[in-house]
Amino acid sequence: MSQTHAARRAAGPAQAERLVRLRMSSFGVVVMLIIQFILGIIYNLYGTAPTAAKSVGMFSSPVLALHVILFFLLVIAAVGQLVRAVGARFRLTIWMSALGLLAILAAGFAGIGFIGNGDDGASLGMSLAFAVALAAYVVLVFALAPPDRSSTT
Image (cartoon, rainbow, N blue to C red; front, side, top):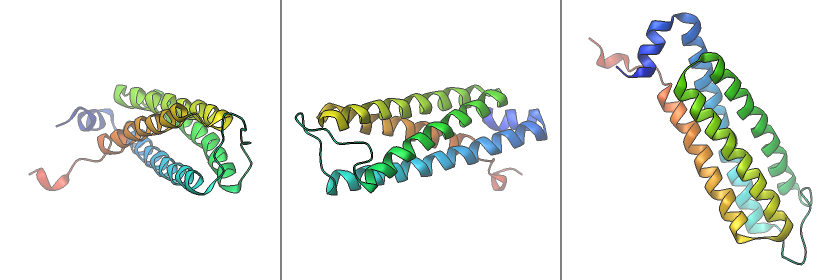
């Protein structure tokens, strides 16, 4: 039995409910990150790319504006996730939630750098930070999954 399932079984219904909420909020952040990625790709393909001579405003196009707004919503969701994780007092959720929040913030700062001058390194930073954040929250979705009842006899 994994540590997550043992913790859930030993902790009682209140702790189990906290872990279920953490799993659902992790799933919500995963969905938001995927939408954020899609918006970023749409802007990358169809938007005006910034250059060293000309930056673009954060709200210069509807797609970019949605991308920026979703970033702020992601930060709020990630902070809420971390608060829930600390309340659940389960180490894996705290570490993965903190890592996810830091990666989202790193992607945001890289995005600010990108819209300023179109730097390829900033674009790469956004992508890598997105991948780290997505991985952190996907780990939580799977780690907090309920035990498979069919294998217990």
